[in-house]
Length: 261
Image (tube, rainbow, N blue to C red):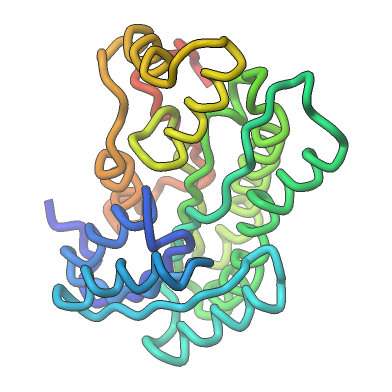
């Protein structure tokens, strides 16, 4: 299927590793111009070394918890590769914390790490898209906002807030030609997943390998998702092929939690 994305400028936050990097690879393969935003210069250098031989790719380091830094990154990306046609938010991750170790600061930190890193980029980008009358945004959020887990309550609350923001902004900006959707992956084979398994192992007084084995046993598909599988959903939602999909929250947990909404 031709996704009709060739030549579009895609800005990907958290694009230097994990799901964001997987998305970047696929957008480059579709012939897009891609701007990556990440916090780590080391990760960014590795991502650019991989992607630049394949297409038109640029990278910008910024702490997106700072709204001024986020705006500066958006401005720099637009100056380098033109107006942003697609925004994929995949940056920021709230630290997993056992419920009995939670303090008020952990809830504040989770909102800063996940919710506001997305909002700080979406705010200037959606307004520019609306002014041009076109654009697509896909937020990679997480099933923790739909299904509460005791080691991810603060982060799950931030995810739930992002889902509401996604649906609300889609309704608000749809009349100006902007589509906004979200993808909620559950367990995905990334570095962050390994960190989450480590927390669960400590809580259960077992090994990280055993936590992963038990997690896989619970999944109807019998395995954990890959970043590339999440990226495939992101690309479709970002593409003109999904032209009448907006305000959707796509659950990607392999039917682990049977639900109708």
